[in-house]
Amino acid sequence: MFELTPQNIAIIAVIAIGALALWKMYKPSEQRVEYAQDDMSKDQLKALVYSLAKIIKDSKAEDEVTNKRIEDLQYADSLQREQTKFLTANVNKTTSVL
Image (tube, rainbow, N blue to C red; front, side):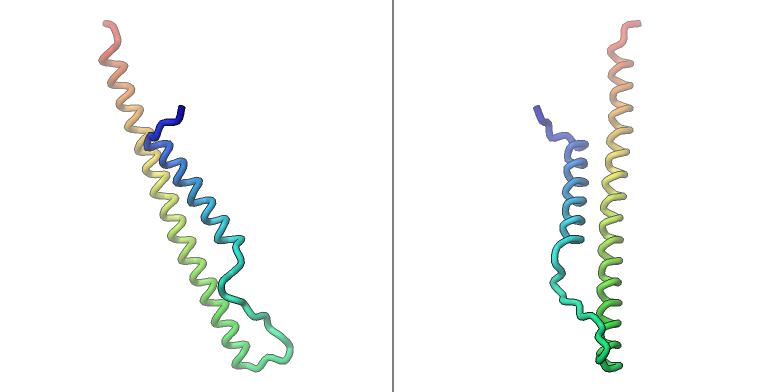
């Protein structure tokens, strides 16, 4: 039925990371972002710009971590495929009739 092979684990991990990324993207933000109004002072606008810059910086850092995880999973998957090819070739060579 369903075997827990490293390849299946990698697929499940990629799906879980994708679901987590989508959930974080569409969930309501815990930080309430204030929007600029006409009557805001310079200090308020400055604080707003700094808070938005911090949110962007945090998002970029989170994207880098997520991309690194995806690269690691893709590398592990390609390594697993190459090992499977090698082992299959060896089994075929060993079991073939000369």
